[in-house]
Image 1 (cartoon, rainbow, N blue to C red):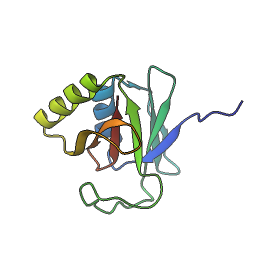
Image 2 (cartoon, one colour):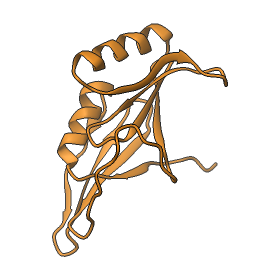
Image 3 (cartoon, rainbow, N blue to C red):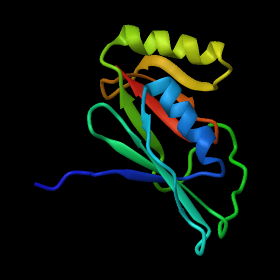
Image 4 (tube, helix red, strand yellow):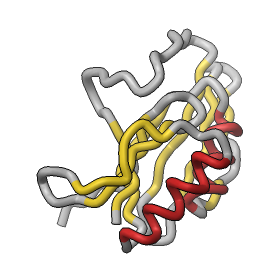
Length: 130
């Protein structure tokens, strides 16, 4: 049966992004892969439930600064479920205390989710759900 194996995320600073997801969501950081001929590096972040995110960088890409919290076309967020409203509330408090931008919530959405939306160090939206 098909299943999503991983998603990939271009980043300007792989280690900064990996540190954030490891520290906040307990992701395990995999070894660095480097292809010097192509100017490409990546690491996989693995989560306890088996999901993974490949964080990639390339010397062939340039990055435009993101407007904080601004929506854009294409993949728009990564959703991570914590299991309870209390866990979402607590993490939102911790993130704000660490200076992480929480752009929405915690709140109940119209489609029945309890969530908050925070930005990772490069401005990617992370939906934190119960």
